[in-house]
Amino acid sequence: MWIFRSSLGPIPERFRPFWQEAKALNGADWRRKVFGAVKHRYRSHPVSAGTMEKFEKWCGVTMPPAYREYMLSIGYGTGPYYGLWSPAEIREEMEMQLSYWEDEDGEKPSAAKTFPYTMADAQTILARKAAGEKEPWAVSTWPIDGCIPICHQGCSYYSVLALTGECAGRVWDIDECGLWFPGHTTSCGVSPPTFEDWLMAWIERGRRELERKR
Image (cartoon, rainbow, N blue to C red):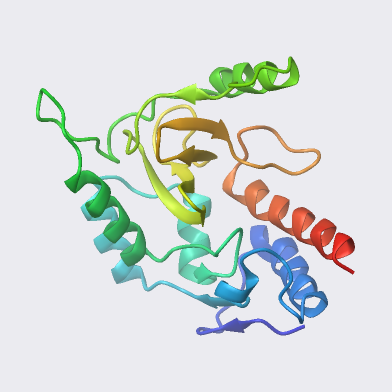
């Protein structure tokens, strides 16, 4: 089924499988039963190059290639949870969070600095979960260096895209209290997921959710 996209340029090759699956999910979810679909309604809005460059200048770092390409060609809206945020929504959220920041050294987190978590950290967290630990996550602060929130999951939870460091281009989950966990990946994906795998994982969850709600 057709999905609203406010600009009808070509879909990049790397995102064509996702786009076809998203259209199929939209068609199956005509009653908007997938979590968050009532909010984003499978509508996407590509970001202009000028808007992206302005956002990157504010962040002090270039966006990971896959995320940048997606936002320029498909854009914010359609996606996991309540949908992908626009650069303006991300900036608004970060400015609000940073306005609350208090540090004895007076230094606030920066998206341009190195993201502290690694692939090994993610595997350690997953191993703790598999072992049945009640609190397997990593604990630090929010906001933190080297990342931006890209969507709201509901309550105090966000999906965060690492911009720098070993995990650049990969997605993590974060609670406002500073509880970190690798984002959802596909059944055959690596954790934490790449941006592309994170999108496809949403498709998999959406299908399962519709099956349960039939």
